[in-house]
Image 1 (cartoon, rainbow, N blue to C red):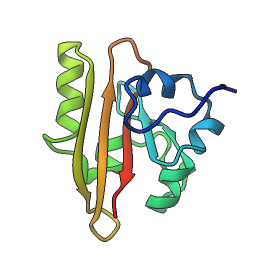
Image 2 (image 1 turned 90 degrees about the horizontal axis):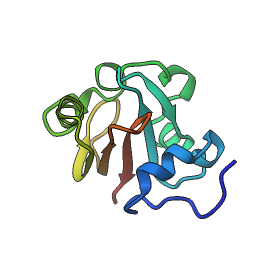
Image 3 (image 1 turned 90 degrees about the vertical axis):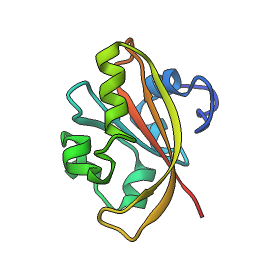
Image 4 (image 1 turned 120 degrees about the vertical axis):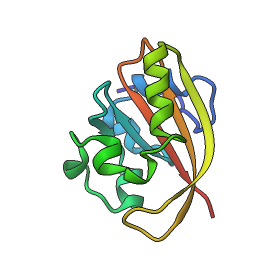
Length: 130
């Protein structure tokens, strides 16, 4: 179990902090977290995202993040940024306003896209906006 305060959605070191969190601590975050590996298979999915998206963790784990889970993000704004960062070996830390449209009424969110060559996981952070 990790100690210290949970990483804020907009903190500078959120990627390293997420990598250090166990699943229990990840579930206590007040924003959605989707972690996936280099093959885009979902390997981390926190309770906040599960509740807000109405998708059970067990049905999400192992799915391709952009082909199955988040098809509305399979575009140049989101998925392509992860692909470009991986191809160039560059880190990715981008925040953008977005509207989720798959499996739900249009929902405004703030997305944070995180990846780094040395990180085991890539992350999509989702903060719902009102």
